[in-house]
Amino acid sequence: MYAAPPFGARRFRPTVSPEPWDGVRDAGSFGPTPPKPPYSEAFEKYLSDPVVPVTTASI
Image 1 (spheres, one colour):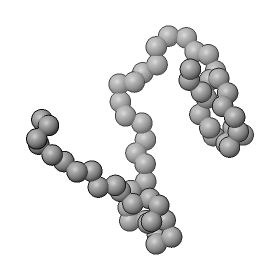
Image 2 (cartoon, one colour; image 1 turned 180 degrees about the horizontal axis):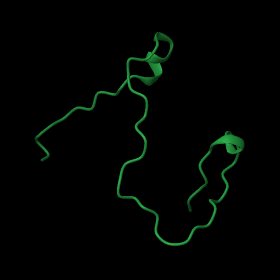
Image 3 (tube, rainbow, N blue to C red; image 1 turned 30 degrees about the horizontal axis):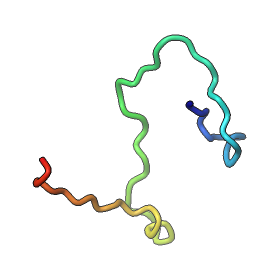
Image 4 (cartoon, rainbow, N blue to C red; image 1 turned 60 degrees about the vertical axis):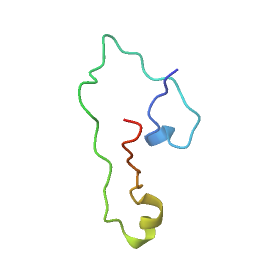
């Protein structure tokens, strides 16, 4: 089951069903890009980019 986006009046509230739609939704491109560093010192601890280890052994 999908839920409506938690924006505006739905923020910090229980989930609700999304509005119905007709047809097929376009998923041929990526959505908006999230904020990127440098962050202010207050947020750096919580929003820093994670380091993802890359190994070639499993490829």
